[in-house]
Image (cartoon, rainbow, N blue to C red):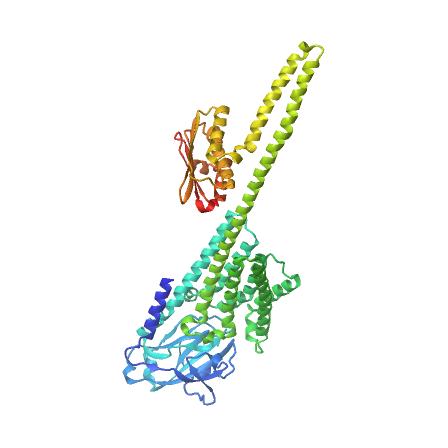
Length: 615
């Protein structure tokens, strides 16, 4: 943006500098007539009955009832001073909407764009035409004739300067005047291309939904529409013969693409009859544009009415969905909908300006073409903001949902633990008691004694395993002990049940976290210890708990075999379910999980959780 601002300032400064040396200022009254006749370039033709207009000024502001898609001619008489008669001269006409052909004394100097039947437009180019020296020497009084053709609301010689002066200076001044539009155009095209490329790459990476597909289609259409009138396209000659036809085709399909995107965004089905009518009318209208004879025989401008009706129908459908989007966003209190509405509304308004002619009130530095570029950038920014807001909102919802799932998981663990302890364990105890009764009442105890002893031993082992499972599901220590004490109890249990030599707990917590946080941290440490024993074959494990004013840090270090994190990822094995669960729980607490592991050097897992996230 600083480059754009600098370019604007330089262009404004350069454009405001007076031209050194004498120039002929052609600004002011000029003769004008609607229609098209090559004889009107003849300097000897009588133009007394022609209307008088002002240049530079938009023809739509003149009392001549000028219409789009019409040809018209300017005639401007001038006298060349003797001081300029021997210089290399040129004529500067500023900006002309949208195509022109320039004659001096009936001799064609050059043209930009084309008129019917193959219309092409060049609205952004500063018009500077070199005047051959023999032309100016032939006469004392000269006539400048300018043929113009207007596609949208930029009629005729709309912005100056309209002067005759030294060619090199006028050319340099025109070049500087174009720089703001060129820079903003380059930024706009680059940003749209980046968004399109990002959407395409994202579609390969994930399974995209209808919103991203419709957005990609809209972005590609906008990129095409913006590119068809860009400086490079015109200067390189691409699409020059049919640029206006293709641009108008884009204008027809733009509301339709925006409508489809909006419908996918708010997940609303379009009215099928209206949608089909709009689609087929748009398709037929766009097809008609590509037949030259229709342009040539379009004397009553019936095609104008067809195109206008098509565009208005598509726009009405689009505005209806935009209002629904706004209503849904307000009702749901989702800020991303507001960003989408602002972006789409700005885009629609910007493309409305050249059609309605409202943009003609703006000065040259903020003409509607620059406004279109700014609106495009604003639309892309609004989409980025909306996507970010939606991602944050959905991430928060997912985190909340995950937290609820884990809470339900813990509650289910507690319920199963109670059921096992109060139900199944009590039933096994009852069976064990009945075996003693059978032993006491058996007529021949020595015959049933071995079977009963084996049964009693099996029931005892089952009870021990059941109590261990019950403790793992929901240790009672979580409700009665601190986090350090619960982990110490768990460490002693694992020392007794496994081959690990020592599990050391370093509890340096000055205050206990909330109960929900304790449960998450306990499960994370439990997962870390199990992974170290099962996969790392560790014999010594150290758990460290430290808290400061800002963070709570949990470190799990073992002397196991370790692993190469990079090779795991390259081999597609990922971090494993256990490590993934640890990371997910840490993220739910608002913290970070860092894993540092190397072969034969053990593994260190560090959890860092901000204090403000614990409450």
